[in-house]
Image (cartoon, rainbow, N blue to C red):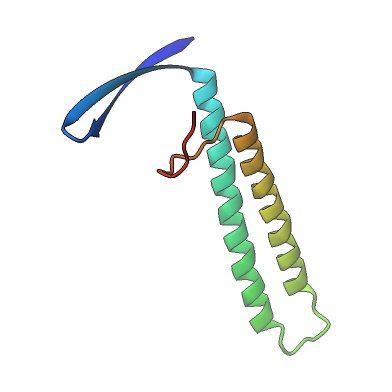
Length: 104
């Protein structure tokens, strides 16, 4: 099933309408990938903050490895997030809208 979107953007004094046809499946894939990336990002922040908390709490216990495990989880989540971002760019689901990125 396809749906038609009409976008309005302003270039100088001229207003332009652009019509785009995208399928619901493509929009769902984009949203799911973005949701996964945001969840992984928040997981990284939570893991990093828990590692800091473990570092302060476990100063009296030098053989505790909770900080090491929390940082290992952070590294794993960061790698998963990078893989999701690379997949998104490679498959065309994600794209850059930076002004210096000229897509043809």
